[in-house]
Image: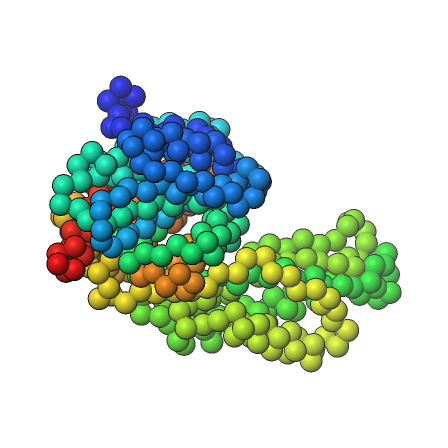
Length: 392
């Protein structure tokens, strides 16, 4: 176990950040936003706050290096809500064991946040040869579908390249899946369970839908993405019934359809309608009275020849000593807003594994966080120096 007195500055910062609760819901990130602002001002960066909702600001930290291109670093301050999970220790009390930092947000995505800020501090102190602008955007609401980054791009942010900090085990992801989450409500008719024929069992109807919905995976598997594999479907939440002796008259569920680049929410809408129609052929009294959007994000990808991709692959290889190839990120993230709305070529790079994200006893490897700080710094140096030379 590493003594606290021997921790590197970026690990000390990460543990401090984890100790500032920012779960979504409710999504209050004010403590983390204040922390980012204080740190940024300590090394002379320009700081701007964008209020998206009360108590929920984006924080923009800018380093100016004269005329030249603009590079954006982006990651989120909010974390998953641990309600219902069982943790070995309180989730907002970070600790170190086995070369890892444990705590809520350690990899998703406060490891990226602390590493990006550490990189900015180093660049502020040593910016020789750099030309252009680096903007770090610490956003709220990523866990609520990316509302912070959506606000950011709607405010008109422009850049020549961007890096999104999410747990990729320091690999460079150039494509990610989108999310299509819907809440469905099935209606039946309540009756005493001693006379079930007098009612309509909403659970049975929901089960008929689930069996049909799961079949869609076999069709989606026929058209995999080269980096992401196939699109997918899953039922992730289901609630129904009121008493043990009553035929249930309602069931609510959430479906999670993951989209690959080239797919749209309209396509997923048509699929859902087709599945419901097939179930109604068998269950003529099926009542599905509401379809509500839970989360909707768009899949996106960046051309592998883009300068930000080349700079990122080279930076990771330099720091880790391992040659890199682009990979896919199998989840939704804020890259979608930067690419599809702002038109910014973007990659995803960050410490930690997606396996640990949203899981009890979340952790990140110390060595990855320390390497991430060096990687982000090298990406900025390569991108800005390279672009400056190309413009001269």
